[in-house]
Image 1: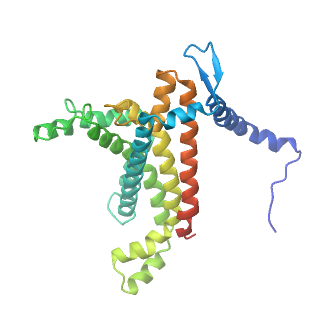
Image 2 (image 1 turned 90 degrees about the vertical axis):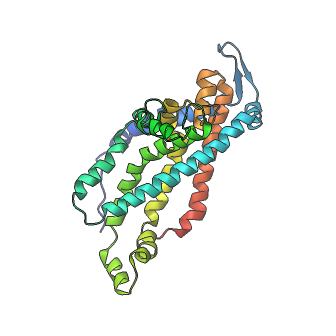
Image 3 (image 1 turned 180 degrees about the vertical axis):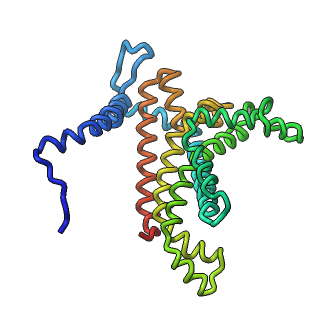
Length: 293
């Protein structure tokens, strides 16, 4: 017999969920609806005159070479961040899952970066890789490597990729470690008895058992790379040099807040949302087939 929670009245359940529903409606759905409506309008910078332009904003941004460049940068940046963050998180989780001395301290230290704010994370990487004051930055220059992320777009993109991936490694580490600890040891012991080596046991037994965790983290990391890396980019490069690190989310900010193109910025946010929804749907359609629950 299943036990169900019975409330004395019909009003109490609605009162309990009302605060969360209010937060979702006010901070998620209402801004989304406003962005969709604003994307069909053209407004002067002072807000004195508004014109209904249908899909002109979308037509304008999709033919803008700077926007298409930001789109390419976003896909490259996001793919690199997801790959680095998930690979490093999995490697550290596999290492921490072994019987090593001081494992508790090791795991605790690996979780700490997740609590660091994006702006603080960017400041840490600035003090490491700045060509004038950074430890590694100055070392690279002294070694004859012309490192300067403030002038070279490739260097700047590499730096924001490393900083953004580092910020997400600890989140992936937590989930991968939990997934590894939930795998029954008897499966690995049986594979070892059958003669499978350590590498074979990982790829044939451990990694397939981690597929639900990997699939979940893939979706979370894609969303993180598209939306939550704004703070790192803004603090490190501000989209430069020469728009080399200007991703879609940063271009929405630049055009909307700095250039006061509210209609174009809203159209960009709608396109960005559609891109992420499409990528998530593709992942559910094609990648979930390889997930073993």
